[in-house]
Amino acid sequence: MSNYRYQNEAGGGERGYSGIEVRTFVSTCVKYMIFMLNFIFWLFGGLLLGIGIYAFKDKWEQANGGVRLETIYDWILNISLVMIITGIVIFVVSFAGCLGGKNEYFYCSSPSVERCGVPYSCCINATDISSGLVNIMCGYGVQEHTVVAASKLIWTSACIETVRVWAERNLYVIAGIALGIALIQLLVIYLAKTLEGQIELQKSRWAA
Image (cartoon, rainbow, N blue to C red; front, top):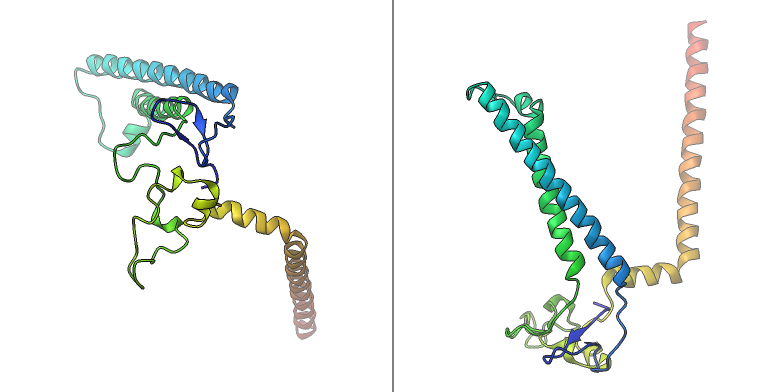
């Protein structure tokens, strides 16, 4: 929620709330490194899939179609099938990684009325129509507003970011509470060990 960006319809540069062009925070080096690594894994997945299919086909022909696949162990111990399944997973995941690494940009060019909008859960007052009735359109078009205008309609800070900032501001309090809980736990462990020793002494006295 904190990185609102859009691109104008003429295909201009990346812009913020106010429409002023800003420098992107996305590293081109990191983006294309992710793309290349995923591309290498994509090729490896395709190669593994091809080898697995060839090995299974060869085994099928040698057994005259009598490859036994009755139990889960038959599937696990069949190396060619393991290669096929692993190859498919690597192929699909790395292909998705290539798309995600290459196409990280965001556009507000959708013809839908939801363009440049955010979920109604981000709205400061999602029930501004009437009490108890949620206005699911309260976040429509807010990414085209200025920062000041948008902050009056929606929460411009993400939940995790807000929690992180709060934790940093109250770091000593959180550390003190955590230390206190840890000391109490250590005290309980010490008392438990002491009680265990006393019980053992009592048992030895009874045995005597």
